[in-house]
Length: 529
Image: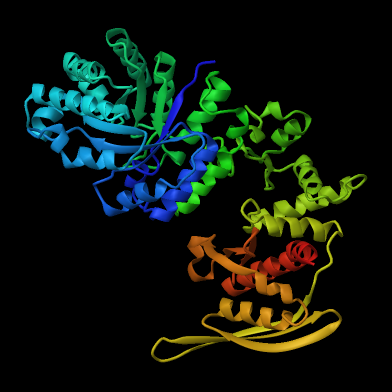
């Protein structure tokens, strides 16, 4: 099995993506996760370019990396400057990393128009920088920027840049599709030609402007490249970089290459991808292959019936191989098999209950028609199942609730909620205020329950979304409210639907608290005890 070395540039190229900003602490945490995953190289940043990257490399010296070589990124020496006097090259060396990645121009158009220097001077800059860094004991990766565009316009000069790096003793030449405009067949052919012309180890660095970065990277490997650059989740400038979260399983599971220390490391892929997305504060792409929340989600009744017999009927790999999981969704497209599979997943007995399951299926379809959506509200879904199948004892019962909002002349508003509920055989009647009606309802419910269910202090709401379902009805439209809650260890979501946004919010809120007190908080209390 051929080995393909992965260079992860999430901490460098990935941070050029719009909306991505990492602190030094963030970068250190991600570096540790990438090392756990087993990538060969972690490109940590551009020392000398900004204080943040300089601090990162200083602190990264204390990291105990087991698999990855920390890599500093820099550029070839400046025109007309001796390499040993170049501040940028010096900063790369001072980062004290075992490997360095140096970018240089491989397209004559960029040399003459962007740098405005002689073509031979650019070759000298490449040669001098690589040779000097090798003399300092570094493993050197030369990033041939804009290589494929340069090759297509001036083949001889693009190859001359690769040859200059090779003659200087470079370890790797990464051919870069910097503008992301090349096609897989072009990548394959050009990589083959480079390997025929220059006996150098070749890597590939692609961007995703044509949605082909993963395909282009795989084509390069099939043509003979043995290093792949990319980022976790494909983050990066413009449309992003090649997505390593897709490249890794394709290499290992589809093409027969090894790129991680073992298959056990591949099982860390989904947790690492989601961790990076969370730290980068990016909304998770649910439909992302291999690691997305929906990557192994089945909704159609015929599909679910088939995967219950054999998952290979609708899954190209087992989700466990990449650390993901199979999910069965419920909707108006569902069949009894969906309901049966979900009930079993919840641990609810199903034998001899086909009639009940069919009634529940019809109920779900009616609710979906009304605007409910349980795919993103798994807690409400589980409560619906347990209530319908008599497997749920509510921790409290709401007897009456009222909320009033007072809007002042200046536009300031205050809300007051009054509640009457029964908990542990006792009727509780109380009032609370909030800065809005939903906040007031949340506050009064907690106030009423706290003496009887003190574990409620562990949970809180983390997200609240409202979607209008019938825009044509304007302010009288039905709305769907989604609430996300957490206790720090678990996250769950609930849904409510009504023509009244307060009623929809109340439904989702009550579900959230009942779910926690009956199913999550109860387990937590047992563990703490």
